[in-house]
Image 1 (cartoon, protein in one colour):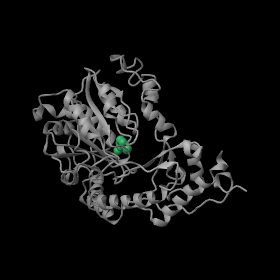
Image 2 (cartoon, protein in one colour):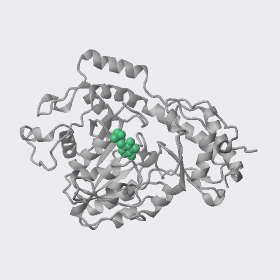
Image 3 (cartoon, rainbow, N blue to C red):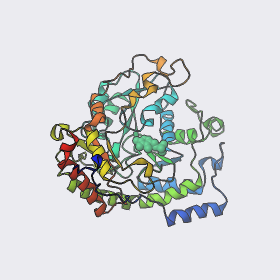
Image 4 (spheres, helix red, strand yellow):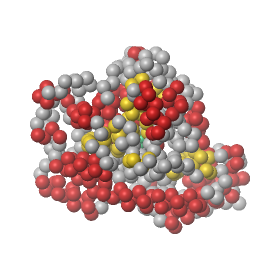
Amino acid sequence: MAKLAISGGKPVRTKPFPAYITAGVEEKEALCRVIDSGVLSRYLGAWHEQFYGGNEVQALEKEWADYYNVKHAIAVNSATSGLICAVGAIGIEPGDEIIVSPWSMCISATAPLFYGAIPVFADIEPDFFCLDPESVESKITSKTKAIIVVDLFGQTYNADSINRIAAKYGLKVIEDCAQAPGALLNGKPVGTLGDIGVFSLNYHKHIHSGEGGMIVTNDDNLAERLQLIRNHAEAVVEAKGVDNITNMIGQNYRMTELEASVARCQLKKLNSLNSKRLQNVVYLESGLKNIPCLAIPKVRENSTHVYYVHACKYNQGISRVSAQKFVSAVKAELPHFELREKEGTKLGAGYVKPLYLMPVFQNRIAFGKSGWPFNLNDSVTYEKGLCPVCEELYSGGVVTSEFMLPSLNENDINDVVSAFEKVWQNREELL
Ligand SMILES: *Cc1c(COP(=O)(O)O)cnc(C)c1O
């Protein structure tokens, strides 16, 4: 008789895993404070005392800048808007090239398009999954203006090498640290490793305010341009006396007082949430290291990893079962997380499809029908095979999970490890 749940056996566990909930009493009090104040957002899209937003937004920016030891923090309504702001702030020209990673959330690669710039994909490191410095350097042309690096899964990008390359060619580095709040490299916080760092406060991230984003920079000029793009720059530049008006058609990327008040509470919890996460990683790995087809994630030298995703390399040569099959079998042994009934359990084979395979790049259609901005620059291409390391990892080279979430205790993690062990021991049933 079949033992594995996927073939009709009894699953290891059916009781849902506890939900990861970070907001509670403090956030409720903060929201009430804002509602009682009567001011749910305080911005004017004009050169005015209130151009910079209300008390909660400004207090959050100060606390965020202190925490990350950086001169400027700028609150926005998402990391998506933050990345678009960053591309505008560095003064990009239509047709310029920006080197991006194929393995990330889509906006890390599509942000350049909003200013008519062309994303150029470089491959990723086989062990750390962040942009590979050698590949980055090989993609540089006379049109390259910047690199958007990603601290993927909570691992810091290879800042030592990539920043050296950026300096050599005079490129700006925009750091997408949405998945790595609180990670450090050589003792320096993420976000401050490049010229501009962008954090996310969306519901899925380590800490959140529902939706939200934070941009950080040590550069006064970039900070001003970011603030302008956030809030209707075109209506502000004249009165503010801004000389450089390139890319100064602004947006409304403003964070409200409600979100800012919640984000302030969340920032205070980041250290303790991250240490619980790291404690769970150690415990999870003490079990997973006994599964021969999995390799525990490597951590870059002199850095801390904050595990937005726990990604083990998968070796099909050892198991003789594809990652997809293996993962489906483990998933069948385990329940979903509370509040996430529709998503199945937090386990996957691979991660997103290499981003250049999305229709926007395959069809070279972004704005309008004539191919803008791709028609400015025919030399950049997006064919399958462009980033072989990423393609191999995507098609079953890694097993990703979130079984280190701080809501889990050791008993929960024991069930996870039992499920992996059970599938490993009975893998013959999958052949
Ligand atoms: C979540 C995420 C974003 C986007 O964040 P939003 O705040 O939802 O816009 C960008 N980049 C990465 C790597 C992400 O994980």
